[in-house]
Image 1 (cartoon, rainbow, N blue to C red):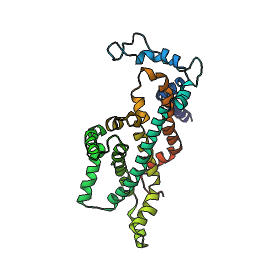
Image 2: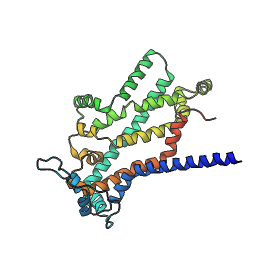
Image 3: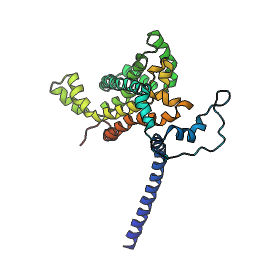
Length: 300
């Protein structure tokens, strides 16, 4: 009995210590989000007073030297909705950039999943050296950083005469190999016996794909869609290189190059920009977790 009590006491200490460490790191990671949300309710004068020195420019146009320590302020002196009014009503260009982000990301996610599911089914069902070579090329392309392919994408877009159009963003995103690689792994984990039973019953390839493989990989599709949305929602390099017109830039580009005249609006814009990914993760968390752990197999 004494040993059992000691063991339980040690377990409680380990659990308590682990909980405190996890809570510390969780609070540490949440601090930037909390800071952004609370600062979005500050007035423009208060934000400039707190962080103006960070974004101030020097005599030659560069960043000025910060002579005093910048303190992070979490609680505003007076709650103000001025920044949201300016962003949502008085400055419609920020809303236009927000909808630019939606227009770019949603078609990329939808059509990449459509094309990737068809390609992945082909890779999973076919075999041979040609298939292996093509799939290996997909892996190489997936592992290549996007910055490496920016120049080829620019040259191809220029050759197709789609520079400074939405197609310059859509086409490279739609045909990205990331979803193909993951979905192929999901399709391969479907037991062969299930597909063979469908073939014995007279099912065609399209019926096997649409009525067996796709429903079994539903969670995988949702999890990949979430990852794709977050990835392309935060894209910066592609619009900067492929789009010359700033009116076509997504909101992520604005957030990546805030200048001294836009500090007061930056926090409100950042909060608005965080809402779609947070909502997507909030309502798709179960699909994301199950899709990662389930791995496309069949539950017993």
